Image (tube, rainbow, N blue to C red; front, top):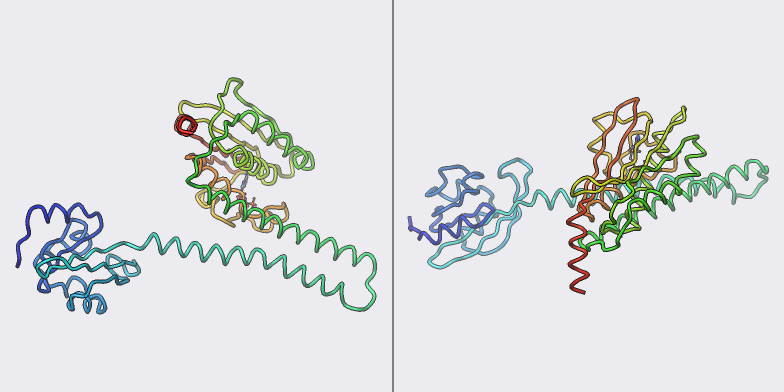
Length: 347
Ligand code: ADP
């Protein structure tokens, strides 16, 4: 078996993914990741024993460079891309690139399109059904006409809310790597969000209160997105936090060391622990009919999550059944402010 130099081995180890040098059908050298994936004793063994994929072997044995997609190494369904590159002296460099994350992202995208289509299709089917009945010849009494018209209106408004939230989400995602630069007062966000939620709160017999630290310094953020985030949390607190008995919703704006937070607390029914990790998934709802009746789209907390991703923050949820929920949007003050100052100085 051809020996390899110290530098070649160092180079191979510097490659993060599993990498092999192959010559005369044998594995001349393998880096640590390749040993972890294919087994500790693979150096010196026949390549046909380490990689059993027929397509891949055909390329390797014929000395053809290329990229081959294969599954089955290190897990039955795990997808890999095998890259084959010729080197000098009949050696080949093989790299195994893990495609699991790309595959998962693709699956999420496909699921998302299917879910969004389903969410839009349901109200659309209702609208078509009622509109067809209204447009058929024949007498329809005034009450029925009003009822059908009002259902069409309700369902069309639901579709509009879903489309608006989908557009919001895609705008926020498009700005993911654009640093937000407004100087945002969290007290002002809390105050406006309380005002925005006032009529819904009154209709549910619930009170909204604001508790904001007086000397809270502004943070660098996107004003519109942070307000949308707080509006969504307040709307949820009223919808799901205010049940049969009147309850209180409190919006807090606070600073804690290097972070600031916008918190919305309700004294409602609370959320069971097994739902908590999934709340920010698009279209995830604990009770779909209740969310729909309350005017929800299932996208409110997904929007919250993406606004926080853009701001380098995170969502903290505490909830206890029967006692209520607390949703905190935690924002890193120093990092965000420093970034905006740097950009302003460079401009
Ligand atoms: P929706 O449009 O359905 O409100 P969200 O993404 O905003 O969608 O919220 C997802 C789900 O999380 C809601 O359907 C509801 O079941 C639950 N939820 C959100 N906020 C609260 C809350 N404050 N109290 C209880 N449940 C909540």
